[in-house]
Length: 136
Image 1: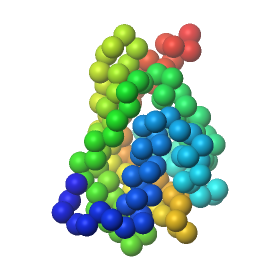
Image 2: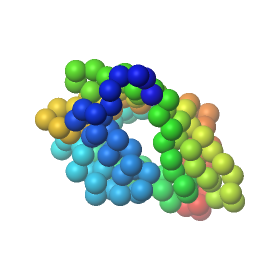
Image 3: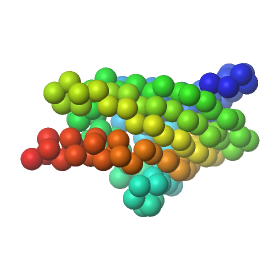
Image 4: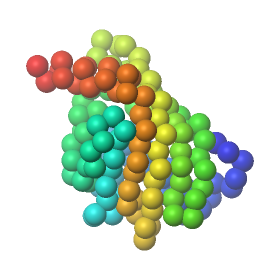
């Protein structure tokens, strides 16, 4: 991470959000989103609702074990943060996977109101294929 102080409410919110995703704690993730939050990814260009995003996160946890975020850097903004990170995990059969990403997180009234996430689509496709194989 960069060398700015990290102890501010937005950073604590984002850290709680990432920890909840790592733990598969969908109820906490939901509570950290504003009800009207929108989540967008560069590989499908679709704006997801909170509930649609939570479905994706549930599927991610069914497919990828040992999820862990490695925050490379976070640039603080008045309304949120820009963050670069690597998501690490293990696919079925013990295959390690990494997903490089960057995201803009907008925060309003102490909750995440928007995420624009830019993912390495090749590695996301690997995770998606593993999830589809599990579904049969």
